[in-house]
Each structure stands twice: as structure tokens, then as C-alpha cells.
Image 1: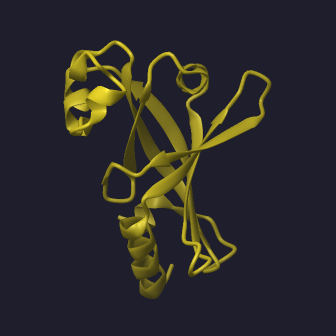
Image 2 (image 1 turned 120 degrees about the vertical axis):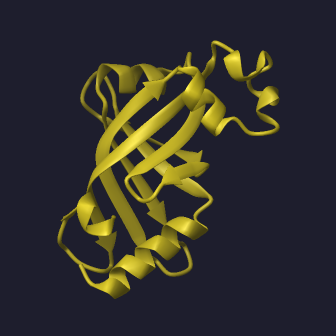
Length: 141
């Protein structure tokens, strides 16, 4: 992976407001939804907030395999990250991701039982249109 590609990837992720998150349903089919890009640790770990009662949360508990996709509609660039998704209900992760205004969705606050944090850990990376190759996430960290 070239330094130019690494810079383009970092720029793409920094500017993204929305990330497409894919889970695997009970029949083995992918399910994708757009989610807000709230926080991350480098390019290897990405966090999302969600409702605990949703089917997607159950899908990640049953099968942690996941994919997230960043894209730019203006440059036609895309970054696919493949890895695993963990559903976090602990105080540390809930407080880490809590934002002003979340009360609208979780009226009981940061301890609301319907508030979950999804923690995605990337393993593989593919950048479009940069290369047909798949890279290990370690090449970007």
C-alpha cells in the first residue's frame, strides 16, 4: 500500500459523516444500514450507537462477522473494512460514546437498557479505486 493511498484513506474516513454497516442475518444474508460515524481509534476500531432491542444488535450477538464501508460521493472513493462487531453494554463504552442529544433516543440516559455501543474491530481493508488487493489492517496503523 502506497503512502498516497494511506493519506487518501485517512482523508476519506476523517470526512465521512455516515458509514454503511453490514451484519449477517439468521439465513446467512448480508443486511446493511447507514449509521453515523461517531468515534474511532485510528482505522482499526470504530464505534457506533444503537438500540439494544433491534434485530441488528441480535445479529451481531449471534454472528460477530461484520463489514463497514466509507465512501465519498464526490470522489467515488470507498473503503471496505472487514472484521468483527462486539455489542458493548458496559459503563466504559456507553460513557465513551454518549453524546448530547442522545436522550432523545435513550430517555433514561447513559444507563438506559436500550442503549448499546457497537465496537467494530477491523482485520482486512480494501480501498477503491486504489487497488484490487486486500490489505491487513496493520498496514494502515
